[in-house]
Amino acid sequence: MIDAIVETVKTGARFVSTEWVWINHGMPFREVMDINHLYYRVCSKCEYFENQGCLICRCRLVPNERSPLNKLSMATTNCPLPEPKWISAITPPDDITPEVAAKALKNSKANLVETVEPEEMIETTQEQTLMTVDEIKKKRTGADGANPFVRTRTGQYVQGDE
Ligand code: SF4
Image 1 (tube, rainbow, N blue to C red):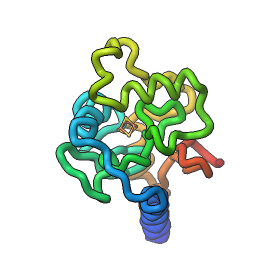
Image 2: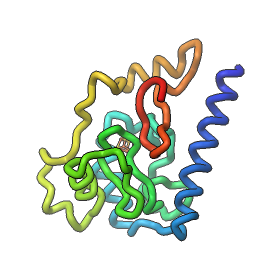
Image 3: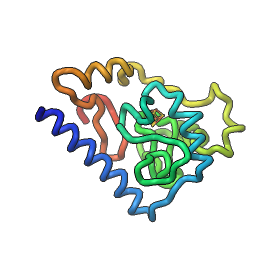
Image 4: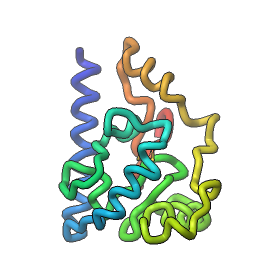
């Protein structure tokens, strides 16, 4: 019960942090075509996508909606993976390589999709540090119910202790 409360508080804190960064940058939205591109071409094909949400950051991900309740629509948000599949042009993570940033940025824009071959789309390669969806679900329903990912100061998520 206590663990569930702690996890709820943590999720709330992450939400407030995401919203705060967005507000601090003037509340910019992505174009709807970019939101839909991220939804249909990237997130909905991701192994960490479930029920219109991200299993890692637990944010809501939906198409055709510009609102503070849709992570894909806020132009300051990034995919939470250590090697993000998509990033913000305004507030990209500062702990990724220029090569990863360039690919992730290409994945983020609908009008650039023609320049990205499917095999160039970033796939998760850090199998040794990322958990499978089944493992995440098992952990969530386990005794501790804890989120296996920890949010770093730069907004990325890593497994285990920061
Ligand atoms: S890990 Fe990234 S690409 Fe996958 S669902 Fe979450 S936000 Fe989308």
